[in-house]
Image (cartoon, rainbow, N blue to C red; front, side):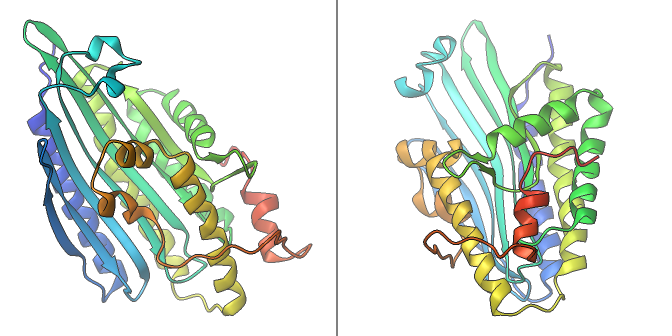
Length: 302
């Protein structure tokens, strides 16, 4: 049986946070992340890093957390009875980026690891994560490149993983009460351990490290495009969908809030400005209508 190494996962997650922060600062060209280190009374802590009002990014947050405890709460083990009575560790990096320019898409990514242990028994562990893209004005070139990078990250571990994780992402990031996808998708996976520890960890590393290679070229292509108040208003309106999804459906947000997690870090994912307009609809044939007609649908981008 392969050894399971939480310490190796943690070391990589901390390095990944450093690398993504450095890449985003370089692309922004002016803004800097501030770090807020925090401790959890029950065990563990993390470091939240936030960039606000940069040249490119209106708000960007890249969080690392590592929480642990001697016993999982009953609510966490209710649907997984094999976890009852075990000590646990949960760690991950989660990020959300909200650019100024409406032509630059919002993006989200996370990678995480969970392990529950009990003396004399094998550990129960899994990886999860992924990344997704939420454009306000769609560009086929960007969506195709995004999914090509996602496919390439999965390819060394089996041809079936990209279509599986893409479909999982499409299903997960679907706003049911709006009957529309949040964006153009990407990858999503959870409770993943079927390749064994070493390969499951390698897959997770590949996906985590692919994010910035997928996102930064899109930002570079779009960040200087001119825009006006119309585009800004549409961006703020569509950000409302992002808020709705995160507060109504997102598992990480709901679990964090319901379990007494650190609110500031949990709600870091929300944009600084947003608007809701009653029963707003795009004009037929407009660029805003094109987003709904060509991008906010389930598509095989490759």
